Amino acid sequence: MKLTILGSGSPEAYKRRASTGYLLEIGADKILFDCGGGVVDNLIRSDRLPADITHLFFSHYHSDHMMDYARLVHAAWDEGGKPIKVFGPKPLAEINDGYFGKDGVLKNDLCARTELPTSQQVWVARGGTLPRPWPAPEITEIEPGFSFNGDGWTLGTVQATHAQPVLECLAFSVEHEGKKFVYSGDTGINDQVTALCQDADFLLHWCYRGSGEQVHPALMSMSPDPGEVARMAEKAEVKRLYLTHFRIHMDTEEGHALAKADLGSYFSGESGIVEDLENYEV
Image 1 (spheres, rainbow, N blue to C red):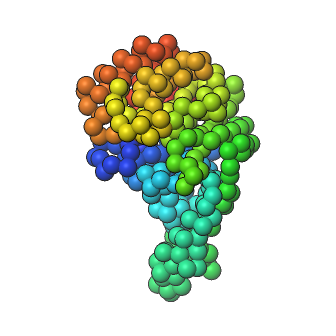
Image 2: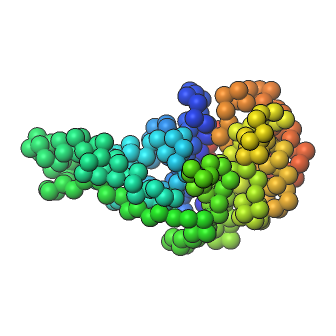
Image 3: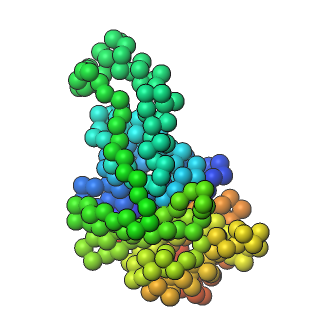
């Protein structure tokens, strides 16, 4: 399994980090976890195209996890790619229809591209055929406990603790050839996520609060700091732990030093803080 960091930031507009998005490649499958703002740009910078994506799994629908969804699907469609298999909690079908349905926000663009003779000629010249259908990703709404069998890989899900009851939130595991990758989504420490992390070869865990940072109690419980994540990962016997979702005020030399000190103090395996466009073998 090859992991590429396409977005390691937060909702904050920030030139150093795109919002959330992670690409896991297994054989011919290119599996994207979340698709926040800037992720499609980084996908292209990584020498891949939107049409390369075979599967997309959403952890939840905060904007920084799904803002580039319409762009990804539209670009893959315009490249002539196969429909992307898209999975996520409800209301995924409604969200997709809001973009690509007959009354969706992109209806004017899609009507022009598929009905105007000039646009049809451009499409045919690029190797397409007529009539040209609208984008039609394969939508599957999922809940905690959902599992999926891919081509030589299996995916599992549990409930992440984040934005309920307004948004359902998920964490994911992927297992392939004896290796296990876990993406926490946005979550507080909970028993389900800890169990999902058990014996993971690589844990990618969100970190929205700096080491020892004091915030509102409601946010504290949902946003573990690096030391709390490290202790959980050590308990779950994770082999490699990397933090992501860093906010601007945490992304300083001092902030990194404090986080890495906590990781080193409470976690015995390999650890660090990911950066956009980095690659890892799992």
